[in-house]
Image 1: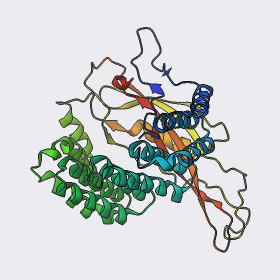
Image 2 (image 1 turned 180 degrees about the vertical axis):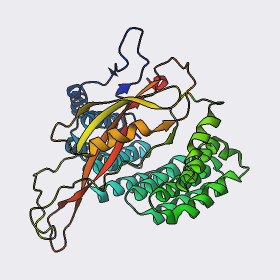
Image 3 (image 1 turned 45 degrees about the vertical axis):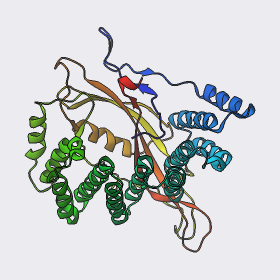
Image 4 (image 1 turned 90 degrees about the horizontal axis):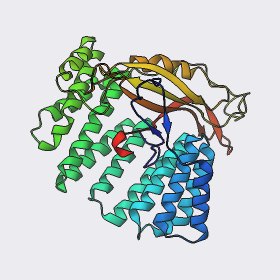
Length: 386
């Protein structure tokens, strides 16, 4: 998952002979450079698409540096300057709104996060038309944020509506993508609440029985989805069976088969000094997210090894990071198309523990929730995307 359109700041490479298996090549431009680039662009009144690209690049650097509030302000200012060009440059302005919403989520602004994705969709809808594939793809992004924020029935209905709209517009690939998203969402919900298992099974079976060519790219994903559902039903060997079946057709890119849930619900939470309904004040005075960059290697057989914390926000990381470190080695990926003696593929992920903002009953002062949630960003560049 990428925070912005081109967050390719850590290059995954196989280590050369004689090097350690934990070398990481950082290819990002310095934060000071992207700040100067943006300032210079604005000073010479560069064209809106160029300024938007400079804004996105600097905000990406701020996110990687851990300055989430600064990235939010950079994007909000860029949006304010360029929103008036939405009709002329709908794709670029929509990307700015999408990124603004994504970074708002990292800052705990859940309503602003949702609004950013909706605004991005509306911009594309007006500029490209409701049936353009890019418009429909962004509508799926709206569904994703609804799902992340707990509005599961609304997200499911939206995916179904996009699938119907895409079919009617002659876009079977988009329709298949929407239905697969629906199946994945229901399977994820079923892992937490068994009441969703029947719906998840129906959604996956509907896709499995389809003869549409557009479904073909999702066949392996459906096999894995059914294996996960079978594991939930008390057949843990289903995951191993799926992995064994895939050894005959290994993949070149990481394909996640199983990821244990990272349990943060039972971690000690930050509390309020007094009644949270009347005194929205942290005992710690903290308002920013905690974060950590974690690297790990995917071995040729799909197992995970050498989990290492590269850096953290350095402000008293909570026990959630221990939960991440315990869960990562239990992940299983599809076998990789490489020699068994290869070290595998290096991945880097950013984990952020975010406390959402809310308005306490009877107050107009915005407070932070005492219950944190994890946001995961993939910071790994694919080798051919250099």
